[in-house]
Amino acid sequence: MRTTVPLTVTARDEEATLGACLDSLLAAAARAERERPVRFALTVVLDRCTDASAAVAARFPVRALASTGGKIEAQRLGLRPGPFNVFSDADITVGDDTLTALWDAMTARPALQIAFPPKQPLPPRRRSLLARALHRYNATRGYSSGRSWFSGKLFAIRDWAIPDRAAVAPRAAALPPSRFHAYGDGLRADDIFLSRRCLMQHGREALAETAAGTVYFRAPETWEGMYRYYRRLRRELDRTSALFPETRAVHERHGRRVQDLLARAPFGERRLHDVFRLALLGCRARYRCERFAVDVLGWPAGEPWPVVVESKLP
Image (tube, rainbow, N blue to C red):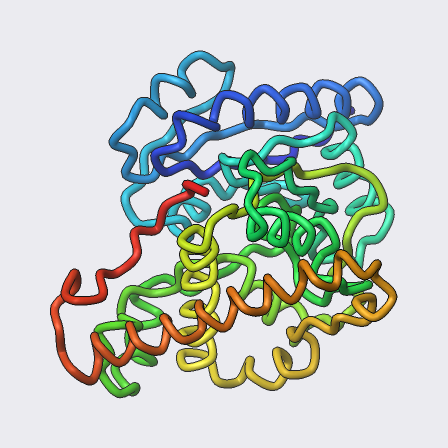
């Protein structure tokens, strides 16, 4: 008897990548279903798509739904009963053993709450020094030997639960007003809150990277692309800490990257890391300037530091 596992892909204007993503997920599902007593029920949730993402999804044997509330609400719409749920971004591809690895991890360890495959950046398309530095940083996982949080690009989870806007509203109302952080909009990134929640409730052993499987993704290759990624991450870290201060301690204990492998990296890689650090300083400075401009000076979005479009472009 087969067990049905829901698999939800959330997409927002992903026509350029959605087809390859679904191809790889369906191939991985087919292999898992040949080798294990499982069936993956794939749903695509289209979040306010204005491009041809819906037409791309229609070419595949998947269920398609429409959502308007952002990534978190798209995941909530795709949530289904099952031993666990799998969630995927639409701008990745996976190795054909990836869903098998998630099934094996979740069924072998009933106490495991979240499993996620290793990530591997695609070779950079640009030849700039920064593109090389960003690629090496992502390929080496920031020169860290381990992580205490998971990647939201693809993961399996037993108990997906993120407060909706109504639940967040009382917490947002108790905070100082901030146009920049817009606390009342609710949470926007899945992995930050869910990582903290899992570690608080179940401990480090409840969250694990699989030994097999691979998620392939396109890392940023320009400083603007790097800043878009940094801004999304930094703002959601700040917003989560403000809205859920009870999670700060677990982030301090587990959420900071320890670059324990950097000292043993080849000389050339250490110099590339210096390039990365210099670019990161620029991201931090721009973030502070933008936050100051919006919240302190009260400048409208777009003048003189425009709010960065949350784009997947490199």
